[in-house]
Image (cartoon, rainbow, N blue to C red; front, side):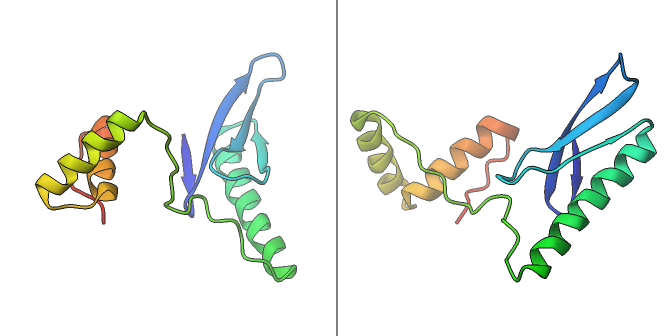
Length: 114
């Protein structure tokens, strides 16, 4: 995984072509790049992100933010009720409780998110 200016890319190696192919994965727009070496790949990734940002600026558009911070999740109504009750018991919002649980599930970070 590669990161540049908040954009993340996934890279695969094409053994037949002897080239790395990358694609930004946290964006609805398509940004791809490639390189034969790690240095070429890194530079192509950075250039592609910079070109995307420049293209947006030239068109007077805001670049798409990688994520808005809004996550819509559908759960069983009984689970929703249990989450609401637990949040109330802890004196936190449902968002904080769910954010904390997701954070723990992903990386063990137990800090609630506002």
